[in-house]
Amino acid sequence: MLPGSLDSPARMRLKVLYHGNCFDGCASAALFARFFAEREGSRLEPVRYAPLHHQPGDPFPKDAFDADVNACVDFRFSASPSLHWWFDHHASAFPTPTDRAAFERDRSGHKFWDPDAPSCTGFIARTLSAREGWRAEGLGELVRWADVIDAARFESAAVAVRLEEPALRIMTLLEATKDPAIPTRIIEAMQRLPLAAIAAEPWVQAPLAPVLERHRGAVDVVRRNARVEGGVVTVDLADTGIESANKFIAYDLFPEASYTIVVTRDPKRAKVSVGSNPWARPARPHDISKLCERYGGGGHAVVGAVSLGPDRVADARRIAEEIGRALREAPRAP
Figure 1 (cartoon, rainbow, N blue to C red):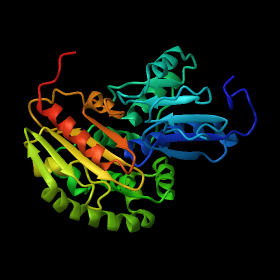
Figure 2 (figure 1 turned 180 degrees about the horizontal axis):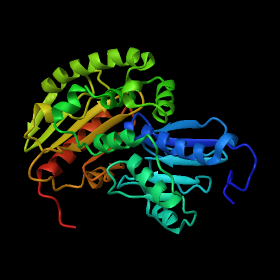
Figure 3 (figure 1 turned 90 degrees about the horizontal axis):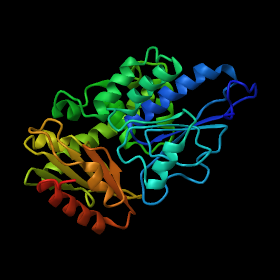
Figure 4 (figure 1 turned 45 degrees about the vertical axis):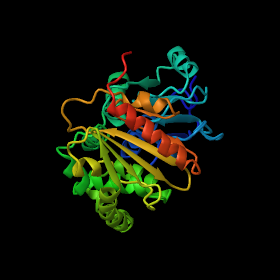
């Protein structure tokens, strides 16, 4: 019997692990927590939320699965028997063939993967509707924006860079914040409030204001540091003090580009972020998740990343050059 199942009257502790600093990760956590709270009722204790980040080695801390019911959303698979619910849509969800085999052997009926889903949030909503008969009442806007943001279905790069929509302002704060309380507060608000109401909260607007100011400055920094070659824009931000930048700035500045590669550094990691231009024609032929997997990273066919230790900027730059070279070539036959 699953811990905390409907057959047990005891108080229940739920922990939701999610892709940190990510709109889709937070929205996925909000959607699943809302479902579980409605299913379990008053015996559910306050939910704990734990962000996870892709990094070298095992990204799951030793105490990752320490609740009665542990769920992981929008993040890679763990074969731990203490993981009770899992939803993901990343093509690189399984670090090893052993992990993939463990997933395929699972008979819990609570672990789901769809690499073709535009967002994990939408995937969870559809899966819980089909499997559990649960409807995400009032959360249609959240699901729609998760699909738009995670699949880059914006009308234009300018929309993604101007950040006028409430969802995009929340996205920007989540991607930039280092305050661990803000994502949890946003996750809890997403379960009951429209996105415009969340974006208007003083506790969102106050930390967001300097983030937006840095974003405006980052546009100029990206313009100065970008190098365009063969349809690939490479931007090295490792020595600029900018730890992360809106991934769509390069497409707004260089609309003819097919791919972007951005090198960044923060106190915890050096990172190579790779993306494909959703407005480029013809369609981009490379599978970015496969390119990133060569270096221990992963992602989706159209976006991915490689994370290294913070002292490995030189390696990150080398990897960026190698991936750029591969993107400028015709893709290899399978």
